[in-house]
Amino acid sequence: MNYWLVKSEPSTWSFDDQKKAGIKGTVWDGVRNYQAANYLKQMKIGDLAFFYHSGEEREIVGIVKIIKEAFLDPKDKENKFVAVKVTYAKDMGKPVSLSDIKKHEEICDIPLVRQSRLSVMPINLKSWKIINKMGRI
Image 1 (cartoon, one colour):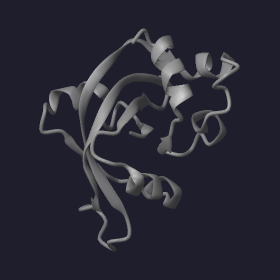
Image 2 (cartoon, rainbow, N blue to C red; image 1 turned 90 degrees about the vertical axis):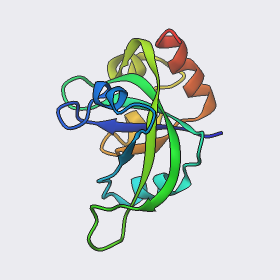
Image 3 (tube, rainbow, N blue to C red; image 1 turned 60 degrees about the horizontal axis):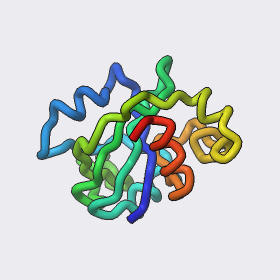
């Protein structure tokens, strides 16, 4: 299993929206950065991803599960980019802020900190476990 982080502006698509989508899940589309798109292509069914609210909130609020691997993004008219399908998995017991991640010596260099503009990124197992602990999971 691999671990990821996906970002969304809550005013565009929030974690509450994701929960309301139910078990059928939703398409994670609109990714137009080639590096982030390549990460989408690496996602496998069953992989888990932190759901990060970008913008003013800047915090990990929950976890989603990949339920459909990469397919052509239906919103991309040029057929260059892909999407995946995700479903709600669980809430964080406590949101984990970007500032708290930056203060934590063992995870302060994860892609969320180093490549803050990227909307999809991998999370290594050690960081996954630390962030889960910080989020009371």
